[in-house]
Length: 357
Image 1: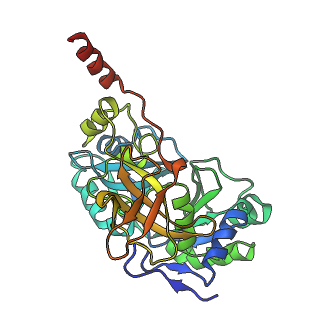
Image 2: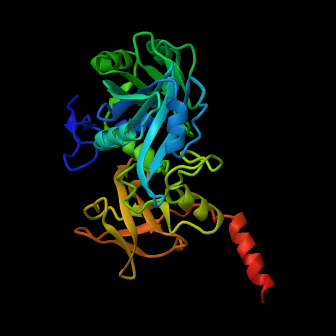
Image 3: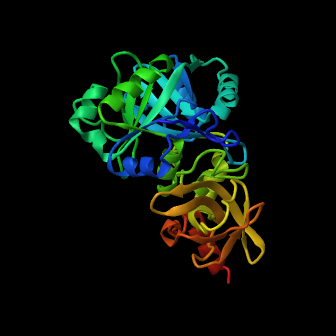
């Protein structure tokens, strides 16, 4: 198989984009099983008796008592509640593992170390690689045997591997596993899995899977103004009932009093022209109403993109993308988030206003 490298200008530079049949790899991810080398992701490990309570105080998720063998998402916000970092957090064997985008490894490490003060916490880069496995055949005995498992882990749980690292199962409608293993074992694990019938696939297949599932990616589907509510990270990465952390005021205010200014949706793109680029504006009647995030050709959906659009924009709004390539786009109506219920704070304000009339 001929490995085609991912575009150098994209977030997966250095990884394999596909092995000559990107749409076939996507089809295999949907109906068979594939392994995607995502070892360009960065992994940090936290040790020390106070690591969980310390991380709880500076992040958005409730992790002060995160049970051993569990997986969650977590965020770090700036003072205005805008997303700075997103990571997958795995608690296993007295170590907390964080894996994130490669370009955020150094900034996140520097920020966490700066926040340690006198807490009993040590933070170090981990020389580990992430291999992602997708597809229903992951539940078959030959694949489980290659992984050394009797059965699939429960969603959002992790199991240690005998030779180091762990396997975890992510939540979602399909089966998605991550092998987080010592980097030196990467090739050995890929060979073991392919011998069990798991097909190699590139990051194109993974990105198509992610986009179809409306799962945002830091720095691609978010910008420097993104707040968690806009991209569906409330609940999955933000716990609404916990103590103070940086940016909490914005999270609480939007939850209780208002609605986020933007929403994450799926756009269907005109496939007869060149694709738009991440960061290009989305236009309605010549006026900017949002920005393009991940753009990918999906085996069933065709050319699609995630986009942050002005909240409340009707699904039938005629859209085009700006930038170098102007492409007609249509909102997938099923991707529009449901209308938020009236928050307790907003309801109280409305009652007060009604009482003064």
